[in-house]
Length: 255
Image (cartoon, rainbow, N blue to C red):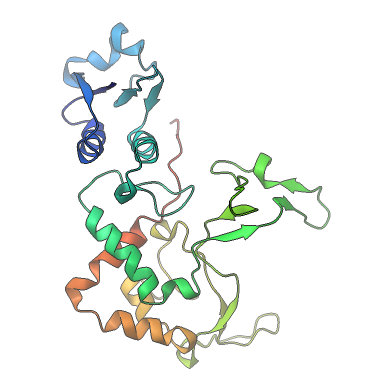
């Protein structure tokens, strides 16, 4: 059985939500941060950093940080409704928007967004060759989440949310200057990996939100824009929730 160390006003509540959603049995050990129990020798023996939450697996392994714990639980117990949108991206840390997240993922495909913003591309080789530099093996030398071989795909999946192609985005998006001979209304599909952390949007940064960015699509993106605009206002929220989930994986930052 799992043992969860947490308490009120800690992120342990996020882990409890996932445990409850998955019907997973666990034992709760309350750690009172106001009494300094997270700095007690007993808890420091569990997590030397003194942070909450911490989860002890049935095998005795200690897991820390709520996003990492929730990702582990969703993968181990097959909680598809809580799974991350792609490899290397953080899973939802709360169940509050699970249904919207699922609907938004369907909308992303149904509206035509995935036609250009392809969720996954597969590399045959992880070796990156740049002029004047030794070859770089992205499966070994890239920081997490690094590239990993997938036998089922026969290559290295990259969750980029781009097709890496140029598309005609219409006269409304014509650039003011020619750059390297590229037609002024053609743009390389931007990656949506980590799009939640990269506002403002579009080539000139004029779109402060997802809605503005989608509404500015023209040319080859006009059909997807029209499908999105045709949605009632209350039906657009799920797509926003899904796009907001496309964040870089959490990393430990030591102040």
